[in-house]
Length: 114
Image (cartoon, rainbow, N blue to C red; front, side, top):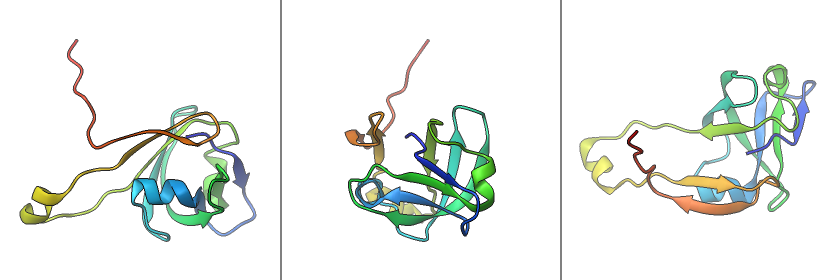
């Protein structure tokens, strides 16, 4: 994903296009982890909803020091599951283009052998 906004003088959070939240099965106010591929920063915040199909990824508050517009980031969420819950669980991996539009969705990462 590409950061579109970095709002320092705003409550902490990360505003994410509502369509992306749904595709990734991330709930508003859910804790998320952000890995900034551009500068190596890693941090936690929470998701808030941005306008559907806007492509917005806005890193807000103190986290704005860790991500700037055009930075490439990975957004992840984690949960604790029982063994029974894990049997029914499938992850939602969402891949986007340079405008943060969904181009592919997967439910696992293929293992690459060197």
